[in-house]
Image 1 (cartoon, rainbow, N blue to C red):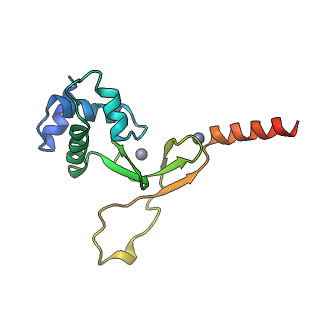
Image 2 (cartoon, rainbow, N blue to C red):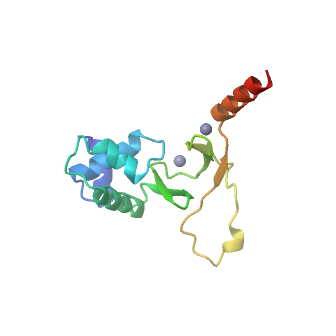
Image 3 (cartoon, rainbow, N blue to C red):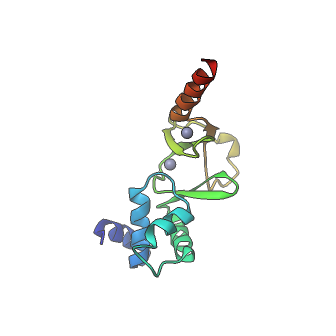
Length: 145
Ligand SMILES: [Zn+2]
Ligand SMILES: [Zn+2]
């Protein structure tokens, strides 16, 4: 049992149930922005009583507490990130991988939204990651030869 995770949950006034600790621990140890499906799939072997609803509800508690942030680059999939500091996300359209990148100080100013209540601030980029670019170039070379 991860006591640090349990302490964090207690600090955030979330009851540290075994399943919640496991789910948060998973997010901490897997910074690859997993979906509910992935978290469920990887944990259900170890926790046979786990349900997707429990994963979903637990994550929503973490989001409300500000420990986890949702990533919605695509409409059809939500991924989750334990890293809630201001950073951007790059999604590779080839391999589907999501990579974090550091934002330059306050990359986009929101002074024009003074009268608005901002609940989320996201920077998303889409493109091709260096590994996939490399693969593409290799394939092009093969075709040329
Ligand atoms: Zn890629
Ligand atoms: Zn991230």
